[in-house]
Amino acid sequence: AQIKQVDFVKSSSRPRDCPKDGLPEFAILGRSNVGKSSLINALVRKKEVALTSKKPGKTQLINHFLINKSWYIVDLPGYGFANAPEAARMDWSSFTKGYFLNRETLVAVLLLVDASIPPQKIDLDCANWLGRNNIPLTYVFTKCDKKKSGKGKRPDENIKDFQEFIKKSYREPPPWIMTSSFTGLGRDELLLHMSQLRNY
Ligand code: GTP
Ligand code: MG
Image (cartoon, rainbow, N blue to C red):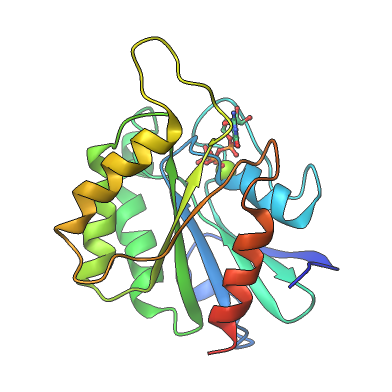
């Protein structure tokens, strides 16, 4: 399940501009700043394959990364980026929803959820939308290395709370994995999970 080669293929501003070679792909989705680009860099063990930033909204296009010349990881723009220009925010939902509904080669969405903060409504809304549209989903909890701050809860406690919320929306809860792009936690588990899904 290891990654031996990664090639950045292209950035697309519209779903119909995405690669048409029929290779399977995984979409990395989540709130702006949740750690999508960092996770991609951790998976491929390269620092600057996907650009990261402390400023939310860094990723604005659909970016295809070809792995081992045989499957794709797709970096998507983050949702819930309140400071984006009005036009960019409006675009996001039709743009990304179009991708999810029409992309036949999509194996699964990896929905990234920040485990260092309590469950956010926007993440639950997104999960519900994907669920209603029968889009296969795996939860990837990010920033699990973070210590609890002040009155906040620990990552494992936030994850438990999140699971409680989504219980009501799914007959069968989607698979989930705890990760940290800083420590490498969950990296091998996630790679194995993706290889199992590809081989179905
Ligand atoms: P957008 O492209 O704006 O949607 O953001 P993104 O989801 O790609 O987030 P990005 O990877 O750029 O990371 C956002 C911030 O979170 C950066 O400051 C990262 O250093 C930090 N971060 C990412 N992953 C982790 C992690 O595993 N642990 C900790 N502690 N911080 C992380
Ligand atoms: Mg990004």
